[in-house]
Length: 234
Image: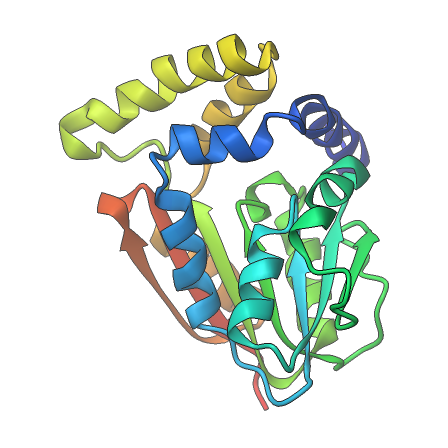
């Protein structure tokens, strides 16, 4: 499947579950997604009113966390699925002039070279095909010394909690997502892409091959998710 066709397919899935997206994030993660996003934002590198790009911003949970933790920063929230950005808009104060939501493709970022202090992407790198284009664009827009921070599910190939999580991922999550959101494809897609996602060390090698330096990563919640961080040489 081509990257463009894949992007349209994924956007259709997310548009179909937008009304349930936040509730299901909390419910299916047992509220852990709030903590995961806080850990992601902890690794940001930004100066004063520097620009942070929140890629695959969805309903703006990471954007809100960035603004809470770095109130002087400007945040450009980009997502391919416009209904997600619209849904999340109410989470950000209307008085906050440092926030800019824009529909955009992660493979073609609508910003100039060397403009961003940091780029975040939470649960989105898995949905971009090919990932190499996203890495190239992120490196282009980061200033020298800038930082990429990724929050993503670990691979479903690794047994977690004695296989309990793997059973939850393959059997329970798609069923619950379908029953609650009445969308039988979106959460099956989620489970399938987690199962097929690279191991954490392989994702780190991808980042290094793309040109990021000082790459490190670590697990959260027994390896259900990982944070990966990489810098652009300055």
